Image 1: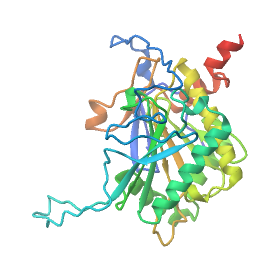
Image 2: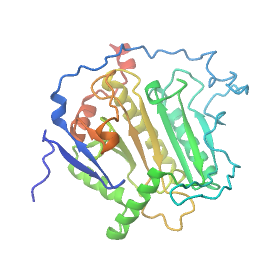
Image 3: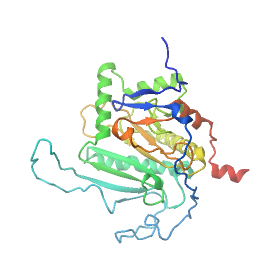
Image 4: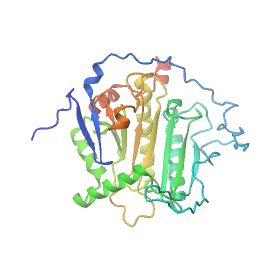
Length: 351
């Protein structure tokens, strides 16, 4: 049987079985000259403590509340929460095409560290493990009341992050949002046909072929997915069948801290900057009678394409037809494999 030619520079479409959607891949477009905006590269240097930062220990936040002088992670309800726990609209739908429904929830902020200047790849593994444990605790607590718990990080101003102090957010809602809803449908469909979790089967395939497999340790694997949309998109997967974040064992959490540090160091080293991305964890929704078809995983969606200043935008064809990318997943994986494993800010001090 003839295998797909991954070296092709011809336009083709790739199917995403997790979302049931297609992406147009046009590697021939990388040959075109770039005549768009080129921004000046700004230094990401920050002090360990910023008296004007509303996330630093002891500082006053936007709503007048004051942070404690925390020494590890710190979680609080967002001062401008997108979800509220006690809200009801109770207005009937006036037309079949004009639908609405009540949604209840909570939005929390999790500061990774008291240090204003330490992103995850620059933190010690033990401190990253503290963040992971907090992800599990918050997910477990909120999952007792809400159907969906979304842990996500928007890193960098380019991704809409309003405060540079390293942090993530945790939103819990009574409704199942669009993206996990699609993943639920397609993972269940695959389970019914093959009696195996879709993402576990996919990881077996990637481990066998290897070209998109980026990082691996005893408990986790990172791949550039075959169907990736964003230039250097990655998918982080446990090697064991795990439904939800709180189900991870102590050794799996330690291994996760290790592989997260390695992956995010590679991202930073790609263009020698604090690499922007949106990251989010997807696990089985709470309250399901049978969630065997689910596999816990994290998506990383970085926007940078050619350099620290050239971004990928979703416009035109992407907004009106389907996503399109200019480099193949294999090319992206190869680029990431070639960058050093030692963070560029540390490597510079050693030389």
